[in-house]
Image (tube, rainbow, N blue to C red):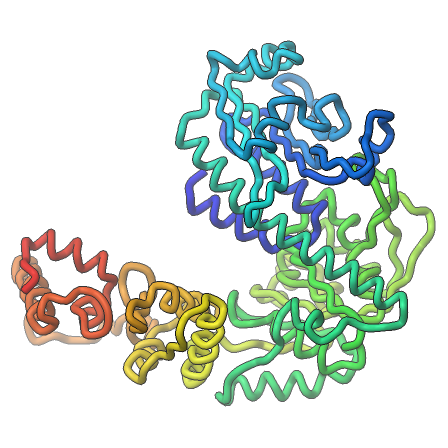
Amino acid sequence: MRLEGLQKVALALSQERSLEVLFSRIADELSRYRGVALARLWIAGPAERCEICGRSPLTVKGQITLHMRASAGRALEGSTKWIRVDDEFHTGRAIIEGIYTSGRPLLVDESHINEPWAENPQFIRREHIRSFAGYPLIFAGEPLGVIAVFSRMPMNERDFEWVRLFAVAMASAIANARAFDEIDMLRRRLESEGRELPPHDRSAAGNSTILGTSAAIRRVLDQIEMVAPTDASVLILGETGVGKELVARAIHEGSSRHHHPLVNVNCTAIPHELFESVFFGHVKGAFSGAFTDRLGRFALADRGCLFLDEVGDLPVAMQPKLLRVLQNGEFDPVGDEKTHYADVRIIAASNHNLRKAAREDRFRGDLYYRLSGFEIEVPPLRERKEDIPILAARFAAAACERFSRAPMQPDASQLRQLQEYDWPGNVRELQNIVERAIITARFDALHFEIGGDELHIGGNTSAPDPTYDVDFILTDEEMRRRERDNLAAALRLSHGRIYGRGGAAMMLGIKPSTLNARIKKWGLERR
């Protein structure tokens, strides 16, 4: 897997708030890597809280041990899937325990593969296992567990580095999911006592403040004000990164349900086989790995709101199951014979044209009409560029506080620079670029690196006019000479300075690394 692919996987998994779903997906993603026969995940925890270890007479109360929480893989021959987590390797045995306690990774090549796993040599020979890699999961200095893979191909240092990067990302994702799990538990406990979350916990999941004074954003705010007090289903449409979740939170907080939870579900991240468990919950023993009863998202959102993010990505096969509970509020937890009921307001969001998808039978029409009682379309940032100064100022102030930097703000010329870019990633991209500028600032001077290698200036993204005439045509040699002369002029005007405000890179609208490469290409000297 390329690094870009790893980043996409890590980003998707980092948004998962259910620990059980996250564990399953981590093992599944590891098993997809080239040559991997078996991938497993162990998480540390008190032995007495584990149903498997709790049955053992050797279990010591209060002892922290490893527990296999997910397994994924398939036998070389036949259809056997390795999904059990209660076999003899549940606690990991000596090698896995050694990785966890030492905090050091382990790569075993083909010549030594039989030595650490001598307890099960039949598996090594039968499945043609040629290498093993194990990596500790560590977050903020705390060991969380171990991930490991058995491969039918020799693993080199590049493969091992991939495992390391994956482990680092997944440790953070697990810590994040645990935090949200604790917030959910606190919310349910307080609700059962007839109380509500204190203000600082209520805002932990996000700030619903929508910034801007443009006509486009005022229209959205007017629509929120109209629909929030009602119980109507709301469908929020817009490109990725425009702030659809902020709109959902604003609707929830403006409704009579704001004393009850707003529960998020990322429809893109739910595996098919866990759909019913995630949405409707399950009872203990319903399937392998169901060690305790677990509430589904509908039960957690009872008397509150359920936010279905990227609902357009929900597979067609799952849509009838969702439609049923939306129609009458009734659902059946996996393994439970009793039908349950939840009073939930639905707020959905999508970056797809669901009306068109319904016409083309790529999305159920009846589900679309159930979701779209009231539609709100959030404009892209390129259609509300007058809001960029206030957004950039807020992001800069928040980033300075977050990263413990002295207060910094973009100046007027930098704000114009930000407003000239088309922002394909919308508000999320703007926030990332401002935060990066705060992190990389030197001597309190901000420098914005926008649009990859080149700075994309200008708001006109339409195709060039084929009727446009020029008075003359330059040869390729003349174009090259002019490019070189232009670079030389920028270096002259900047007195050889590459980086920062007034540097040649900013004058030319390109990244400093790109400029350095071109200086080397043309053999220019910095003056």
